[in-house]
Amino acid sequence: MKVVISENQSDRMVDIIRRIVSTMDFEGGVKDFEVYPPNYIEDSFPNYEIMLNLNYDWIQENEFHAQQYLRNVRAGVRDKIIKFTGLKNIYVGSTMK
Image (tube, rainbow, N blue to C red; front, side):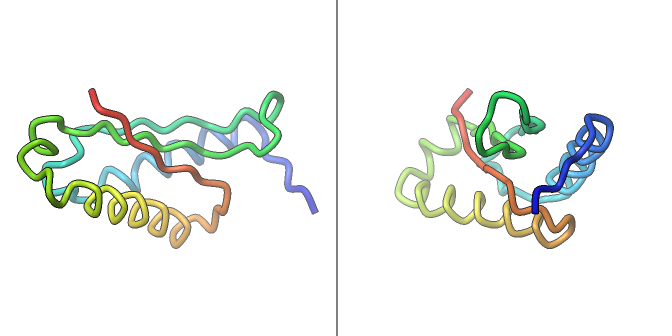
């Protein structure tokens, strides 16, 4: 069964996701994040996208544990959003800015 979400509901869900992620403590490795709504028209598998903007200096200083840290942060963000919203179509990625 396909669930259809209106644009207004999708924008509200983006706001809810932003609030959830903003309460998380990232220990200095993530300096900011962005949330993008799904594109139901162009994407064959539409997802809410959360892009974590990484702190380059922190990642360089903690180079030995950086990959494990990133895996844990991505999984933690995804699990917390699923727990509070019930959404399954979530992608958590990261970028260095």
